[in-house]
Length: 207
Image 1: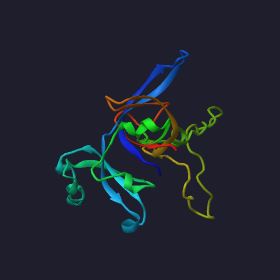
Image 2 (image 1 turned 90 degrees about the vertical axis):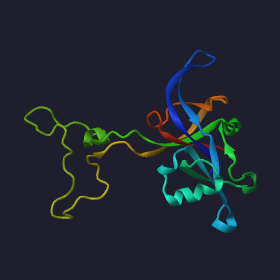
Image 3 (image 1 turned 120 degrees about the horizontal axis):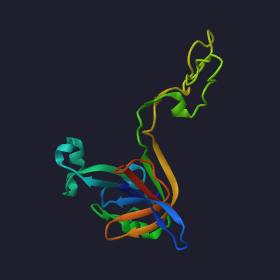
Image 4 (image 1 turned 30 degrees about the vertical axis):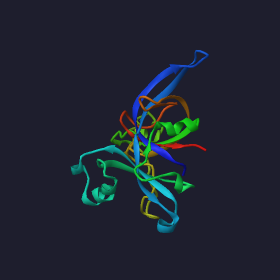
């Protein structure tokens, strides 16, 4: 995994390119993030850095979490994320990681959690077709048969049935960076990013 940063989704809008075409974009606020731990091949079996994001009150964290961050001598951080790196010597404890990191690349991968939509039926959740609506049919939105009879006498795991819709961890890959605002720590990428406004995003560099 290449290095990245954490941020929050502000929302979506549209901009005009040089040719006058409308481009849908997602606006993201990046960091700032702080390196909270450096893992080495000798001590941990691999080289990686751990970053923290979003200051919170100490009452929001438990004692192990506070003890882990105590050596930084900073306000407690709510979110932690780890990235594997090739050269661990380029980083130092308590080093700040901000939006300037994205000046080096043109594309990013963004991981987030989709908007939760609660309990949903099989038709909406899995995009099933409707049943017959005439000739006395009473199977309009029912899921239909879910398995065989006596043998095997059970429903196989993974069967598409009603359940929770949304609230899934997804990654949008190779999103093009359209604009970078260094003063406001704003990153604008082309296309949509999963999640509602305020969703925590994990943005990693491509290449």
